Image (cartoon, rainbow, N blue to C red; front, side):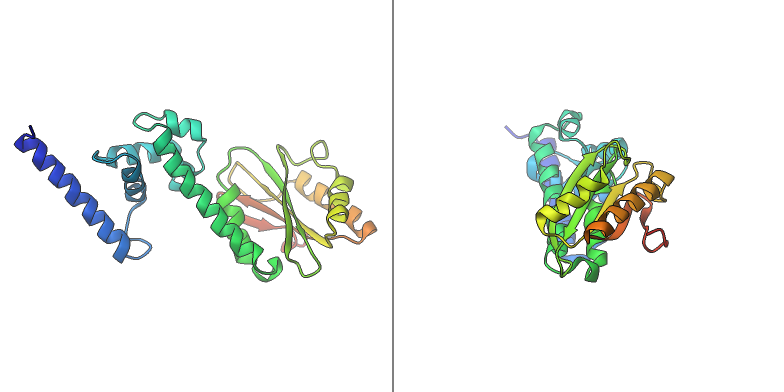
Length: 232
């Protein structure tokens, strides 16, 4: 038997969801606050329950919307009120976002779609809590051949061997490459190690006809191009 209080509560919940849905479908980019975006997403995984407190607690724990979407799946699943189904709903959106951003990079020359590249790298790397180093190998038309995850760890010669980076380019038939890594500290300003390893890879590339177009550093506070700073 449904009591009057329960019925009113269900009616209010349905009305709230309908209002969120209407704002989502008819409003602009800022139609929903960050917690409301999470709230609506979680509604699809956990029906007939108020998701606002859970959405707000996720934002409080992980800091930002991006922090939630980039959180470890196990940490999400174990968060009070979550579970594997809810964690999967969040991770599928994160995965879809990365693939959409990657499509913008793959479909046109990288150097001619620089902002699409930065958007893709920012989505994928800006909120990591560890350093990730990758090499983008390009063909003669500067189209992406391979987005290679080189290492998860510090950028130094212990992890990155310049000749191996260039040899991979030769094996792929690439004519150029772009180095990319992130700074978990948030600031994308290059360190001395960043500059030194870039110079060594660029020199190894020159000897074998491989162009190092740039080294891009991604951080929560933005990005830095070593080429734009005159460091390549």
